[in-house]
Image (tube, rainbow, N blue to C red; front, side, top):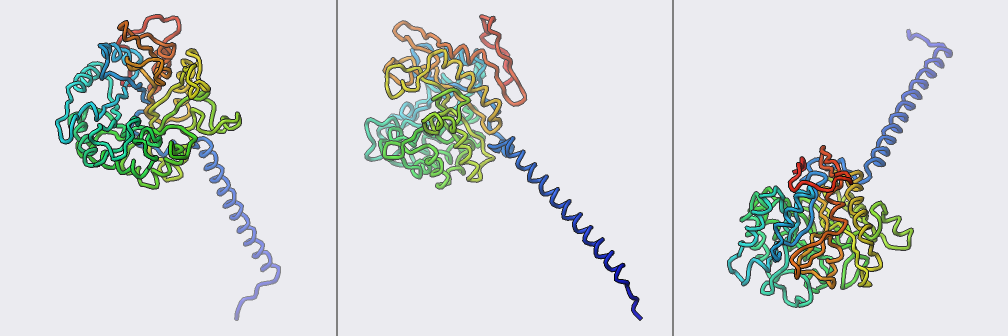
Length: 422
């Protein structure tokens, strides 16, 4: 005979089950809400997914400056000493194909680069080599004589050049930037900017470097911040997405970018728009580019800021509209490094300031006004703008190390200061 259960007991059992289910649902909701809140908090704390960068090629930050020592007017050793005195650890320097190989299939002349490398190594300064400057004999058909640089007719020649440099300086040149600003027609032979064409060139060069020096760091070309989207230029954010569409990330270790200054460093792209400008008119434009990396599943890759600087040009209307005073240039450059140290580590590693001036530049050259030094070749010396002193004295942050700033009342700084960053 089956045992009977009274209606009251059965109701109590059902209520107990309902209470337990409700309790479990409540716990589940609380846990879910907590997880979502935690994820939201982490996203707010790390909007650019720096935590994804677990194996950064460069210490964050790595301090570099671009200089021009090839045709130096006898002042190269002075500029090398200045880099060390600034407590910077890297120099970005153009290793121009045009300077190395005079004719098709001809030998490479590394004599001047050997001298430069010896001088840098004696001062414990590492080289980031900017590759490019296609010689006339190697240029693609239709290459404009007015272009600064551009593609080669034969990618095998590109690979030979990149491999020759990497092979000779294996273990000595720390990193390679492959060409420069290909989103501008003037840097792409006068042709319409073409990301697929650039990625093909990058692949040829990258493969040759990796075969010759597997430990070298390969950086994609820094893109020029621009609002154009026409035959003259391709907007930097659109061009970066074009590069992802062409699969460029497999050929690099670091994504290159240019962080030109159009306003104070803390001014972001949204702030620029609020001022009636465009998003690219801000130092923090690179945050937009970082978001493109994240959207393409590339958050684990580090970025390098290959040009950081502000112009002081009061004359040329192409630049004077965003020119700053020399005192502002000094303060903004110091603030730029401080902002990156606080907000962009570790997803930004290398930061390269512009420039220690080419001694042949004059006021007619746009780069002259971005430089932190002023050349006087006819008189055999170089003078310093306030930005030089600002970069020399500022605090340096590299990984777990903090190199304190020089106090303002310390007039003299050591030629070879102690530098735990390198």
